[in-house]
Length: 147
Image (cartoon, rainbow, N blue to C red; front, side, top):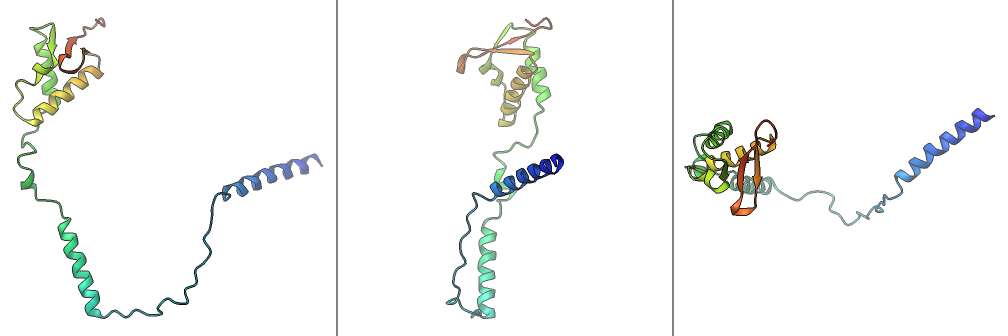
């Protein structure tokens, strides 16, 4: 009897979960479709005209050609590793580097982005410390001993 009681308790909890599952679902009653037209009244030319309109709209959404981006996107990629090396070489001559000075020799947006990513990577790997805020931020090299 105890085993049967245990099975009933387990079954009751199963059905309780199933009952709660659909508790917050509301269903809209069916609408009366008696006034809806029974057949379509479009001709083949109407369908062709609609398809042509759709194609014209789709052509307007086509992305611009690559030549439109020639002034925005640089042609030569700038490797972040090269910018990391360049930043670390600067620490041979300086103890602290002003953040703004890292971008003085940048000739393109790609170089600016690569330099910024290099600073983030060096900071993430705990090779440099960023101190200050805004335009006055400076970089300090962290040696192998942690300082």
